[in-house]
Structures are given as structure tokens and as C-alpha cells.
Amino acid sequence: MNSLTIAKKTLKKDEGFNMRGYKCTEGVISFGYGFTFITKEEAEIILTNRIITAAQNLEKLKWFNDLDCNRKAALINLVYQLGFDGFKQFRKTIEYLTDGDYKKAATEMLDSKWAKQTRSRAERIAYIIEWGDLVGY
Image (tube, rainbow, N blue to C red; front, side):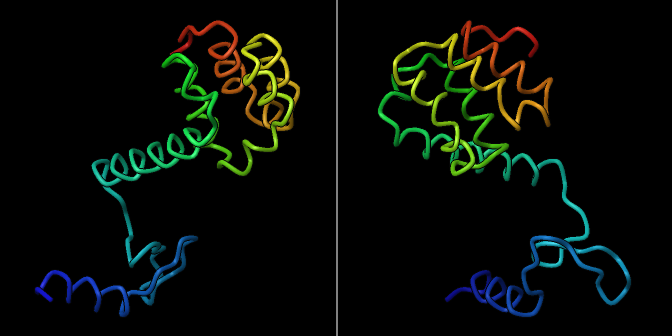
């Protein structure tokens, strides 16, 4: 092992991992492996990794690969927000997407708890699904 690998191993043990955040001994909110803040560059790396994960999960669905880039991006956005398991609950939407009926898929998306909770975002994503256009972004 090299020094970086050893340092990573010992830091993980000494810092511990907490995904929700906690108050450290100094009363400062910490998360992850003792992070008290995150830089924009670090946030970009996390964002990119989560986008890749969302896309990889969606690519398991044969019909997803036949979509245009804008519709793929819209579904990646949805999976990023809800997780892949949350997306799989959109059974009728998925059925319509599989059939290429984007209007009905968009309508189903808007008839959901998700749409009620994040209306503007849901409307933008549903619009992209229906029309394939990025209006609003």
C-alpha cells in the first residue's frame, strides 16, 4: 500500500461516515467523513457521479436507449431527484414511454405526488417528455 491508500484507510476509520450530518465536538455540523463544508468543485464531482448512476440505471430499460437526448436528460433529472426505485413506481408513465406515447406519459407524470410536491420542476420535465424540447432551461 502507498501512503495515500493508508491515509484514506485511517481517515475513514478515525473520521467515520455520517451521511445525515452531526455536531462534532466543536459544535459544528459535519457530514460524510468529517466534512464541514463542500466546495463547488466537490459538489460538481458528486453531481456528475449521481447523473452517471441515474443514466446507468435507466439504460437497463431497453426503450430508454431509443429516446432522443432531451427526453433521456429529462428522465435522468427525474431519477436524480427520486432515485431509480422511486421512478419505477411510475408504472403507467413507463408503459407510455415504452410505447412512445409521450403525451400520455407526460400527463401521467403530472398526475402524481411528485408533481404536487415539485410542480414547476415536474412541469418542465413533463414538457420535455411530451415535446422533446428544452423550453424553460
